[in-house]
Length: 238
Ligand code: DX5
Ligand code: ZN
Figure 1 (cartoon, rainbow, N blue to C red):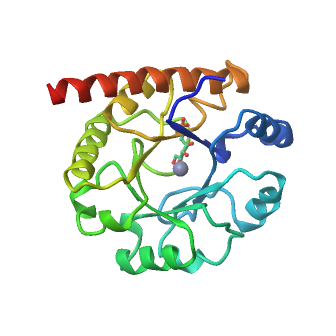
Figure 2 (cartoon, rainbow, N blue to C red):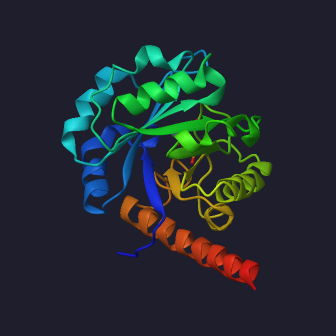
């Protein structure tokens, strides 16, 4: 297995639903870092995905930590719906809540790791006064809602800007990237500062490659990106 410090979160909305158990077995065997649960309410983003009944049914099948991505209006109404465990990540959208800081504190009080997601049109500056309270910032590289969308290219430089902002304030906040995370873009995303990659339909649950192979390929691409990032850091210091 190729080791890198970049983590992979498997987007379960993109799993082969006719083969869920076998796919989960592979994710367990390959030591995938998180199961990414996309929860969509048809309002904040169109379409519907999984609710608590489906997620809570699948949860006991593995010990892989959960990574909840709530694409819903007023997310705090759903905070108690899931069977969470310490170490799970709970990510809400900056654009979806009337009181971002209050919701961040609530998630922290639940003993979970706190993430805030920003859609492609949202500036990183909107997080300036909450950044120190976050474990993770999720940079959406497509608009939330559907798998298989084309990347919005300027979001790659957003990852880089966010990384610089995190460094500037001496924080250890991790950057997660979601949407079109595939071989074409992983090296650029990681070189720009991505720490956690959400593997969806284009990078992980691919039609043209089996799951163990696509995990291996994502890890190779992440390593290439990490080497580029470290190269940049070295040059910056010179
Ligand atoms: C998009 C979802 C993603 C999805 C994207 O709203 O949040 O989790 O998995 O993956 P791709 O772009 O590769 O289909
Ligand atoms: Zn997601």
